[in-house]
Length: 157
Image (cartoon, rainbow, N blue to C red; front, side, top):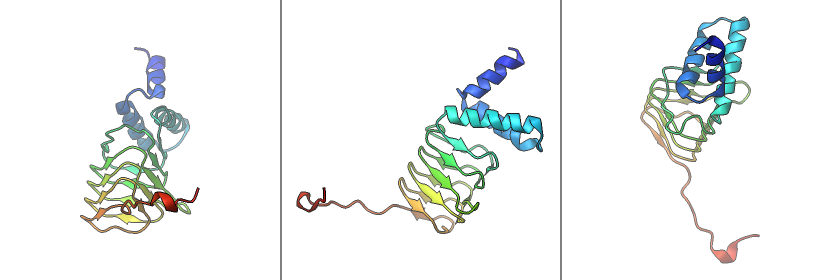
């Protein structure tokens, strides 16, 4: 397979192993045209998978993404530790160019939102739909608010 065909395959984003390979190459290059090309291909690949990982995000190892990059947004200022599991539609966002630092071996459930200048400890479990805006210590579990039922007569429509 020639180099042109390989570049087209990488930019399509059909396989996540290509994405992680682009990510590692992009991290090794210190600027210049090649860095820009790799950043473009990485962004295109993530877009094809339905997600976004900022070009300056620090991701140690290869996180487990059971549903691919589907709906995952990781800020360019974020840091994700070794052995993390990240499910679909997770947002790791920034406030004033400060984003979460996530420890090793964390599990982040579907639809969770981590935002701001916070530190998530090692082996933390964040439940689906949780909104985290404060520091979480090691080995903790974070769950969203419990569901509540609003009786039919009290609805405001």
